Amino acid sequence: MALILHAGKTNKNAFKTLIAAEYSGVQVELAQNFEMGVSNKTPEFIKMNPIGKVPVLETPDGPIFESNAIARYVARLKSDNPLCGSSLTECAHVEQWIDFASLEVDANILNWFRLRMGHTVYLPPAEEAAISALKRGLGALNTYLASNTYLVGHAVTLADIIMTCNLYLGFTRLMSTSFTSEFPHVERYFWTMVNQANFSKILGEVKQTEKVPPVQSTKKPSPPKEAAKPKPKDEPKKEAKKEPAKPKEEAGEEEEEAPKPKPKNSLDLLPPSKMILDEWKRLYSNTKTNFREVAIKGFWDMYDPEGYSLWFCDYKYNDENTVSFVTMNKVGGFLQRMDLARKYAFGKMLVIGAEAPFKVKGLWLFRGQEIPQFVIDECYDMELYDWRKVDLTDEAQKERVNQMIEDQEPFEGEPLLDAKCFK
Image 1 (tube, rainbow, N blue to C red):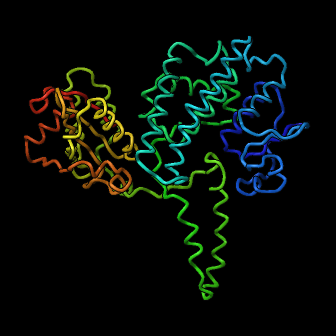
Image 2 (tube, helix red, strand yellow; image 1 turned 120 degrees about the vertical axis):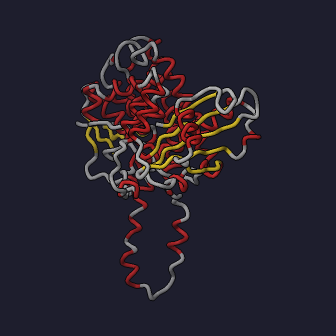
Image 3 (cartoon, rainbow, N blue to C red; image 1 turned 90 degrees about the vertical axis):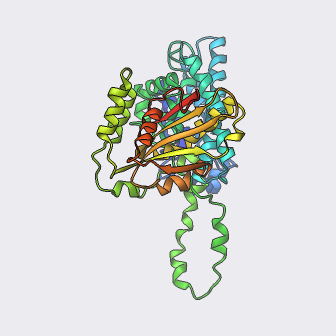
């Protein structure tokens, strides 16, 4: 008899079991017509898992919940399954990495995801804490993977399956290439795993997100609005009030939410520009010598003053920049939150000075003639800087642009502590 897995088709926690089943030759079927927020609220489901979460595996001996436990159960149905490790030590290492994947990777990705998706009140410090904790975990994983193809031994184990499925939400919804490029061995590992036959059979084609999703408003404030409609007159509106089915998706786990079609960005509606931003970014990245003659000249040859605008920014509170690594982290956080503008912007951020307080100055290229409104609305760091448009008729300002693009040192008479690029 096939085992029945109760979960939605896009649930990354269900993927763990389905991939383990492929490796183990175990038949697992997804429950038919499962609807998150409906199926998991029925009395029958609550009997299987009193908390109503998915996935749940229905077995001849009773239900099992918690995704890692389900994946372990399926793997152990095959005797001496190498997925579980080939020795006592390997078994312990598999368990070790499963715990790491859950506590250091999954927990922090979910914390970040909940903040962005409006499942909890968005607070910038909370997001910074989640990202910082995630980077710490990914940094440790990256170090280990620098000399290891798999987490345990020389073949895929359950640890790899669970780690990859936990990374899946991050790669597909939150972590763009600018974020993951800091962890090249994690990148290599993830793409190696998802392209294994048994993984790709379940996951299909995996595409990395291009940007961090914009912050969505929290869902908590909406119930009071429903309650504040006592007018008997509004009978027709009660028809439209069939919308309460919406909480279905919200009530489920984060991974169940299907991405909603995004409205076209207003910048996509601007007249075509002769400047192709990706071509400039490639030229910048690939120019290793004669930077002035190649990259800077190439920039001005490409630059379209009608389709793009250049902006200088200066941090308003430089007197607070008394610790070098804190200042650099502050700039790094700003660039991370600017990820939503990656398709429409290029930037250079310089941390200047040999000793505290350090100055932070930037140069930004934006599509259009103004700083995009969605960037101002979504990235709270914008208000921490003074912004001024570059006057292209002023040769001194144009030369300042050149110096900032090429990280010229000294810059305005002071050494560079750090230079970061947003591309």
